[in-house]
Length: 356
Ligand SMILES: *Cc1c(COP(=O)(O)O)cnc(C)c1O
Image 1: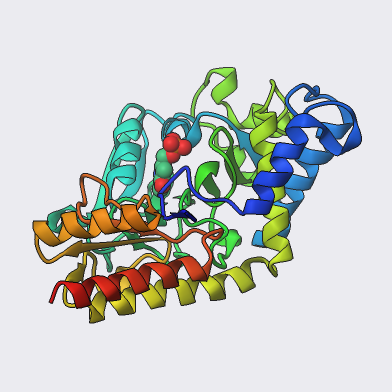
Image 2: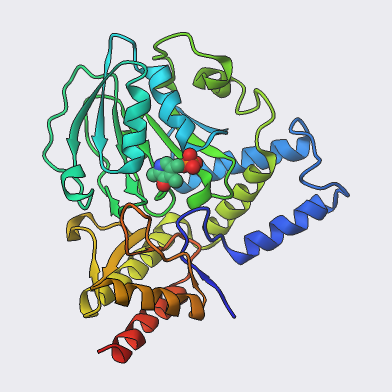
């Protein structure tokens, strides 16, 4: 049975990326060596990491004056590294609280300085993106989470703010156009639209890099990684290689413009069905709906359990909602084809007919 993987992360990658990655584990480009045994100082890896960095720049249109880094520790380590490097002890940072990941970032930042949570959607179980908040001018930076993977909300606007803007884009980077020039630092764990877990992409403005707020341990210092082009120590060679393959795949699809069109189509198709289908309701406000993680609920627990069982029987994988949000969550990352969304929609329609 074909499995349709709607999992939230680690998640689906293109089949051809899996095949190329598997081949390179046995023999990298006819070198007689596995990707798992080559030196990170070799010419072969140099080419891989340069290629990966250039693809990030090309696909996202990263302007001059930015560094692209491949670090480790996931987005979760960025929650600490950002304030450790850029929030002085007597300083303040502003955070927008739009869900679990934002809250985790806030918790880490309070270890280093004062945190102003300038707006939060916690009052309605994070079902919307707050609007119309005031941003103080004297903060060291403003931190946002562009896509809230658990609750299914997304910020599509590149905020125009007067202070350095930092964004956790773990679950929507490379899914749509962004204006990188509006951001001073962007980070993303690889395992949602980039590649396997184990690599973390950081895109940082070189002028912002200079703002280091305190002495920090070497491995947690962005300046060290920037100066050494992500090769201060052994980087995650295999995750970087697979990320490179996946970004090459994205380029072959026509890049961000092309994938964004498909992503819009996929999300619209599923949201339309959720609105139409009498057995399901959407979890989030219409103008805050994510294109990557679509959260919805059944009208009662019996229907929920029944539909989950049907999904399992039909090879619809990874659709159970996060325990904090409940119901269902369908993650429609770049590599998930439109045909999988059509398959899910059809299953919802059949299910409605059988349960009326
Ligand atoms: C998954 C996710 C994280 C956590 O990433 P790790 O790499 O597991 O640390 C953080 N932020 C967002 C928005 C996520 O989707």
